[in-house]
Length: 114
Length: 114
Image (tube, rainbow over all chains, first blue to last red; front, top):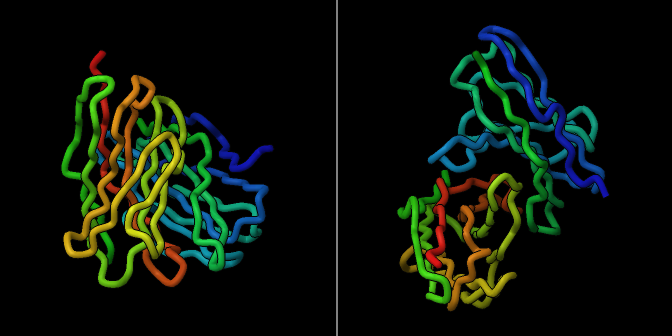
């Protein structure tokens, strides 16, 4: 029972480098989300998707891009990493319109930008 | 745009005492409301949710929450806390026809005094 899987789990980048976080879910969920968690700030929504081929901005989208080419995958990209993007990133998924329900979270990806 | 405020950053209660964690939301339409818990080093787990109907919602682990539209609040309560309840608690609000955009509060860290 994989659920929501995030890769990589840890990554250290230098300022200006690029990287992609992969989120994969095997529950056939329609909706997928990327959040970042920072001390004292809770979880802040970066981008989300309500279906394959769709994406939408969340609260803090600047500096990030996303793609949902396949229903099961949601990619989060950093084109030019900055120290302010040091954070723990969580992916989540849930069923769609008819099943307004709980988010299933991945284990998180800890990113450090030097 | 919706928003969530959790005014208490950190609360300490004695084991066996009652607990109330505050949550205030801002959203123009009927909100979808959630409480999640995050134990140290863990992902988030749904405690309970409110979509409609009875304003007193029962959740897992003996938690309940009451939706008060007039006060824009969704406070979490537990009559008697256990040491295992020490964790961080997040209130969240969903907006849109199927609560597709889910915004979290900044969290309240709960400590339990033996």
